[in-house]
Image (cartoon, rainbow, N blue to C red; front, side, top):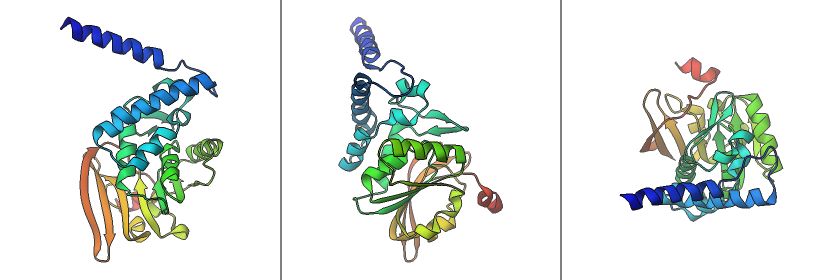
Length: 245
């Protein structure tokens, strides 16, 4: 028992030593190196350690600096195993959820994808490492503006972000090879199904009090749905959602 306690204490000390100190604004080179250590550990323990196996997804999540997508005061917690608030009543998803949803999209590199719910922009940056074209819709204009600035500052200026009602999708850019939704409606929005190619994948949390993450594949006869895991997302909002209730 004593050895377990000692090991626990040592682990806490080591974690404290490699957790970067809070720095307002841009990090120094030393800070970035420390964040890189935490990022690798995040992928190894939280994502690969939970059976996300797509090497392209793992590589993308080792590369994208999650700490740049959270408020300055929360940057020391950016690689922890939990979601974090980003303002406007929204959160950046738990790293594992980003990993599993990205893997379920089954991207190989040449696709055009749509994200509903830009939020911080982190998922969009991961998608930019995995696909050819990324379109992302955020219903809250302040978040859309902030995510656009963050993505551009990190070299992801090719990601197209706009403020709007994600329930309606992005029809002028359709059809999409894959669509990911990072907020939960109580049903699958038909406009998103319409904008998906035959053979395309829709990854979406669905439900109100009980939510489940679905992977859907569009076939000529309709959607094939597979339930993956129970989840908890903020609800999908917008005028179109209200009309369907």
